[in-house]
Image (cartoon, rainbow over all chains, first blue to last red; front, side, top):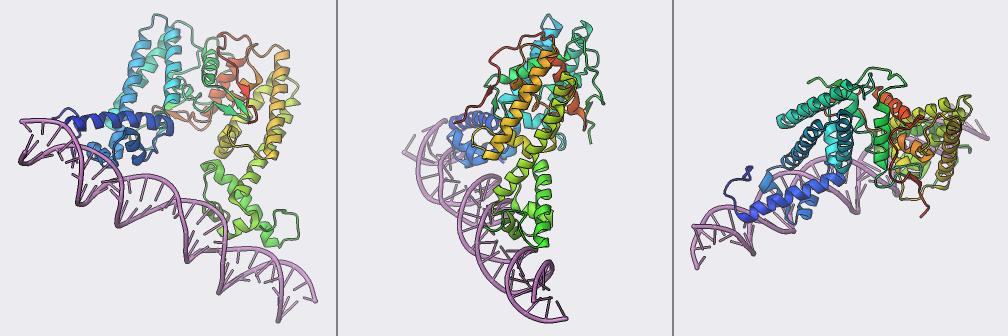
Length: 209
Length: 209
DNA sequence: CATAAGCGGACGTAAGTCGTCCGATTCGTC
DNA sequence: GACGAATCGGACGACTTACGTCCGCTTATG
């Protein structure tokens, strides 16, 4: 299992190939999800499969690395939204961004939906950070009275997946930006005052197995 | 290509196997989508693959037959909702039912999302009937002032897919009935008065290629 | 220019799928 | 109850796709 640390004294072409593989993987899982073949990734990166395995040891390791990068970007977005002066605007922006990120990368959507297999410690840490950020965004908005009372921060997370598969339905075409209409409708639905009481248990944080 | 008409004088065991295959297919595509293997279907039905091909000629033909049945049920539901005395209640009930049908059968969700390949004439006819029913449900609700002005019947269809993939997000578990919360929030979002103007073009009916 | 690091992609292996075919079985009639 | 035709089950051949390894060739670097 060769170099797993990109900063070491590897040859320049090796470093370049590593970067190209990461870029290609990001694009591949965005459009086709986590089930891309190693050959597809390597071809898109302009290298052979051997190079992929030489640089990352495993296809899994490469995917994990890329997904972690996406999570880090989400954490950054959350911080930006927390600094917005208006609480509701911050929450609404984050929901739109998270929904967009889910749509932009099918692979990311597959990972955030995973519940069974234990994620890597790094992913678990980012997940906890994101949960915390969303909880804060939600409480801030609730404190200003902008959020309906029976919506929890867990609902917010769940709702940010609602625009994932809303491009077509029964011959209707939502258009490339149609998902934003869905998110806008959802945001109107979670604004105070809530009209239809939300029934059933609120979403729960998954217990570690 | 043997009997494609179930009513003819086929042997009793043949008729029974045909029914079992349809039931098994319905369950298989519900949980695993349209990519079930013929072997899986046949095994679940308690028959051999040969029987599947003998009864339906093609795996496609079997799937089409089952999907058509699901569409017919949706048409029935739409009629029931159109007969509800309260226009808003009828619309809300249909949205919840359609969202539930999508969730209950992954295969159905895959078909209603299809936009490229031309559906069979039978499916196209049901699709048109459903579009018409939703348009009527929507206009009825709008006439009573219950629906916000900028929501179209196309939006209604698109929104009925929003609860498809909302079971988990970043470690949060929506629970088995959690999708209903999402639909409820959406319904509140499309009720009059709309607050955030819906931007961008409304969803369009797909033109035949 | 010498040499070690790195590269590409053919390859062996293992799944999984489709639709066919034929010997064995069962239904339905006489 | 027995016979023939209809039906059945599942082994089978032919593909396709994917993973990760291995080795002869290439290229960066001192």
